Length: 306
Image: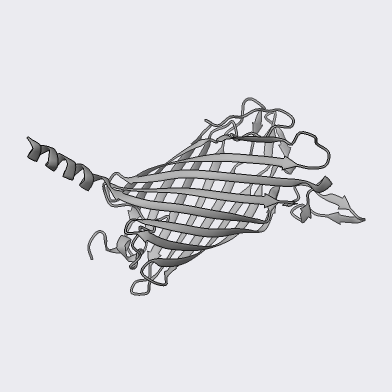
């Protein structure tokens, strides 16, 4: 089996690259994606116990925001990976947030919009058989705007984060099917401006994909995040700042060109804590380029010109 065989098996006839977590890109290949997400939520998963209508609701219960509250989030994410070698990729991700929270107690709704914190990634494929095993690290650089003001929703978090994870993937060729699972730990450093450590997090992302036709693929994704209490002023644990969320995400991908695909997904919250509840609609466009081949053709053309 050639060095590209397992990577190609995950495509299974799909004209555009399906870039699953454990798969690394061939040397010189660039993969990029732009995604738009929208969520409008009037419910959330409680961060602390709440007594309403004569009933005590525990942490994590799904309840309406008080005073007819409503959270609206629009997110635009640009990300890309480049195959430095067949086994080693470098990547970057930059989100843009436009968010607002309205309720009956406020004349001016807290809101903000702008680019959030920049993420950079590195992936190294450790195993090819019997399944792909990739080691991944990432760092979130606090480039987004952060303000600690009442009535202001910051787009940046104000601190560094570091991800450490392992990704396991497998193609089930000759079946047009693949599976992938990512497990990781996020180290979250202290926000020195407000003297708060937001609490480290565990995350798990799993997905399976099946090619229906040459251009159409269906995927099911499961995403889970579990956080620890925040620590404020260096020693005070704050249980109300724990963040937890679980999503189920059915997804369709359609190859519109030989090297590009459109993706439509619905992210549905299953449970959580201190997170908006409801659905997110996601629309993505991804594609890949063989950078080395393009540079080689240009160089060849330049040489012929001389």
